[in-house]
Length: 517
Image 1 (cartoon, rainbow, N blue to C red):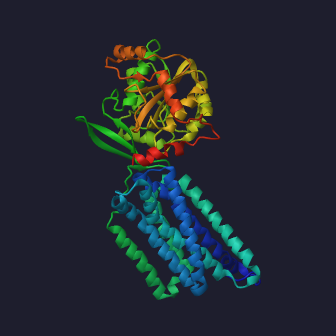
Image 2 (tube, rainbow, N blue to C red):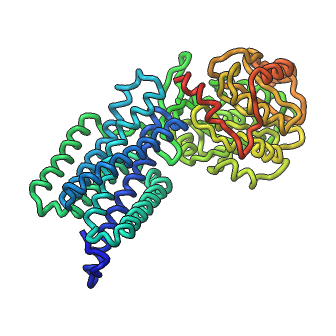
Image 3 (spheres, helix red, strand yellow):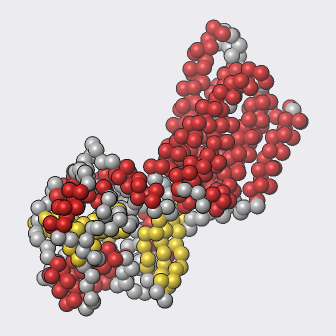
């Protein structure tokens, strides 16, 4: 492949040839890491993006690299040649090109399996083979590059260093450019095309008709197999760096709503033309509390952490025309989808900030908000840095003296450790913390959304319910769990204050995730 360090290359052509092995391993590793990062986006519509998903992706890719290095080294010792290197790249291209097609077909086949087995098996079937094949490149290149044992360590070290540099580039390119520019599926096919070109160039396959035919046959077979499952069709209406965004029409109680799904989770139900419609119970609980709290302050200021389909911001905008409403939604594509598909009008008074709330909060005016709502939580991918006592202190600094911080928390209350930790964490910052449900107790063990409110002022159920009747003209559903029951419930299980240096949120929600799927 290139000459040894004992015989220096001469001229520009010689210098280019000396760089060739490093360029090859650089690109091969870059492709592998691009595929690894893309794996999360490809898997998200089927199994979500949880700690289990990422664990499985990283484990499978590393397993493929490990086995590929081992087998590739043995093959290189026996048959190492440019032709073999070219075939490796062509086989890698074929395996990569099959990923989108398999991603359309396999999830339905393995859907009856338990969620943990489903996650591992789907990841294995989609991504082990490409990682395994591409890992054969580095040992093959080392074998072809060496001409003397005197510099074995130096050459191998340089090749692995350059390979790692390619992996770093692939990681950053995917996260910051490729997904948001091209989408996951187009990027996968682009990778396959790059691998074909590498196979032709690195393997000099035009010099070996048999090898060229073998490589092209692999690509053709992959293309034919892929064509049976409509591989270009994405499940996503839009694909962003954060979510696979989908919107469906769904009939609920005799009327049609727009259903917003981010990855695998339903986030919003929007009734087009009626911004006052609230589908979820926790939203109704919150709306009743707002009605009581702002009865003498119609020009209140509210901040939402998490936008989703913008149901509550739209609701408050409609019911309280003098209010000031701000939303921190990290994903601009979600905000755009709300405008384009979910009846979120372009002339809205709602102000959106497409930033991470933890960073953006420091820019907001202190002591100016009447209400802050934490609406960025589910049971699959919880932004733990928005759950800690340090973050709660940031929120409190934004509130007026009698302001309210409300959070909607998904957990199974009776045994759930996450909900307990949230209550403990808010108690670390506020004298009054309330747990609200529709039945007034926490003695049930089904997955549900519970509202937790914290304030320096006391809240009482009677005032909230009267406010709902007077302002909203509805039958109220709010029930505040008694403080005695809350303390008894807290004492029934170990609970902690979540901190920036210790917030095991994923571990707390893992049993719920496995149980509910």
